Image (tube, rainbow, N blue to C red):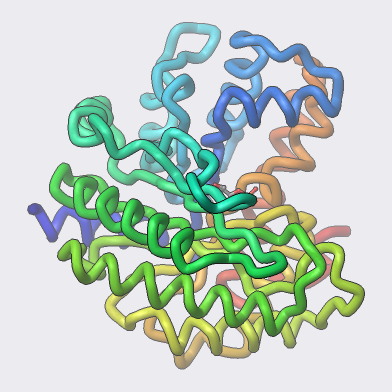
Length: 339
Ligand code: 13P
């Protein structure tokens, strides 16, 4: 294993308070998002949208890495330039989603396990040769009556650890994403309890599979109540619950924690990340960064709406969100930036 390469990549992704742009929606997820706006669900529409993202002027000022999907890593601009070349030229390190999706977990109604380990070594080798330097695998943990089960947490943690070990062997930084999802009525305290247990289990499995913590990135949920919970916390309450939970369960050797947005609005995601950095930054062992998909893309997608004439304005919206999140990493974001 080339540990120096892994450490260098992890450092590069988050240098200058940059973060990750998740644009690795599977075709199904991307089509669902397009459907809401009546955008055609075609290969060409997905390609055009991805071209809008990767050609956004100045994106590399605040984005250190972009997570692609298998279809996207092979696509090109309309003039034939590969997206990979465009990203590298912009100073953005290409990454790739390598799981093959969350499937029903046998014997565990309402729970899922993420698949994709079969043949993974060969796929990682191909992606590395293409130019990818990091990878992503997302596990999904739901909170509900009697959920999550130990079996679900354990199966997902084991798969994450096997994936991470394979990535490190092949020179790709694993972005380890155990997502405790926001659906439901659960409280902030319940999310904290579950996130804590999930993270402890994930790190125990990472340890068992000999994953080197200095050469990985954690991509967790923020600690939040369910979207249907009647009590919604303040920014500071979210910041305290999240960071205190991680201080108990995430080893100091991990270089960076890059949050997913999980369905929060773009502005709330920035404000909450900012609150964490304002309150804790000077005393944390890891960088607190972002790896948002919806909270960084949504405003741009809405403006674009499938139409070429909107590309420039949509790109400005994407650039703006990236800048807001970079400011949040510094603890310098404020709602004035949204005016
Ligand atoms: P969201 O930020 O939309 O939750 O997506 C992050 C991600 O990469 C999910 O795997």
